[in-house]
Amino acid sequence: MFGSSPRQTFVLFPLAVLLFDAVVRRRVRLDPRALPLLTAGYGLYRYAGSYRDAQGAGSRGAARPPVRLVTDGPYGRTRNPMYLGHLLFVVGLAAATCSPLAVLLGARQLARFRERVRVDEGRLERIFGDEYRAYRQRVPRWLPGAAD
Image 1: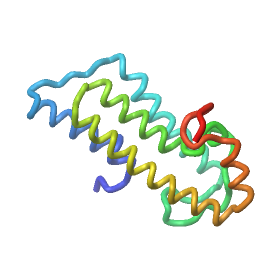
Image 2 (image 1 turned 90 degrees about the vertical axis):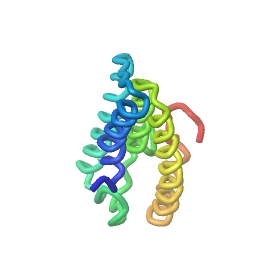
Image 3 (image 1 turned 180 degrees about the horizontal axis):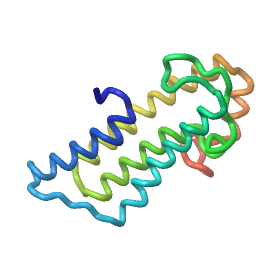
Image 4 (image 1 turned 90 degrees about the horizontal axis):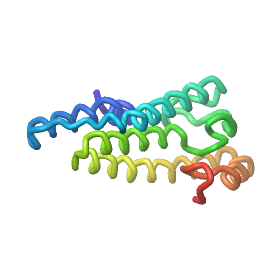
């Protein structure tokens, strides 16, 4: 039920953190100053996924290989805008709750997505060759303006 990354990040993790904080820490803290980060993370995830789908690039996940390399829109700023959206959301969750569980879950997602990116990059290079290598040279893996 909660096996997919979006279900984990955007549903299971917030519920688990709130339940953990209520039961174990005996308090639920939600700092509203972190809400823009939560919103931005979820919004980036949704926008990048919709953009990729509108470009006819392929299916969600790794079930079927992509048929087209998307290099513009949010993918022109970062090679992994959907994963980045997940990570922004979990950082926002940790900031909103100051929960050690949120920090732990965020670290888990970071490690998980770093491995998935490594696999994705190998697959994209095999499929698109020089086109992907050129894209990789001009667009950062994670943050706009940052080196890989």
